[in-house]
Length: 274
Image (cartoon, rainbow, N blue to C red; front, top):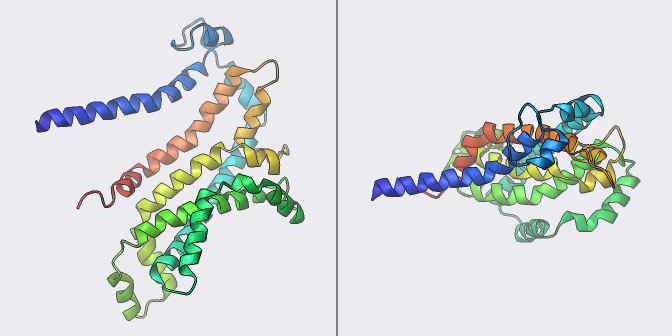
């Protein structure tokens, strides 16, 4: 019975992997096809007649995709670091300290999770215009930090609440300051939660089109997702270039998943087994 159960679990995992990876593999394979091969046999492998790297050549040589890629990396990287750091600090304060207004602040952050930030687009544009941040990467970073902080604080608070209070109390008895306790004790213990936050935060930021289109549509500040739109026309779309650009866009997300996979599994299964 145990062996049959193990086989069933492995079969379910294999099926899930196939369903999750099939669209990605299909995009990568079709990015190496000619237009005729793409529309003639979209599910087939590229052969000597349909194989082509014209899409990649157009992306790398016929556009500023390198600049767009760098802009996306900068915006996403800075946002991830800021969300992880400030989110962990706020979660530590809400979990470790008792102060007036703590419940109201927690409710306010919960509302920030439920209410989409896009509802305040007009106010955000006016604010960024008043701060002279339109067409800057800083505007995107500020918006993405505000967008992701409520969820990050909610996730991290649940993990920090599980840390025994004896650990920080023992450090305080030894004369250790609160800042050192946070960086030397709390942060190492919540690395799995930080991995979850990083992955949950990165994907929406990396794939976002709304705020780059509104706040930073300039040529020097375009992100990768916005830059791909130049290959999509009203009447003609260069699908080889689009798929090539999307294939390149998959690389950072896949690299983050691989780098944080162990911490991600530990975070997702924390508390599931005693």
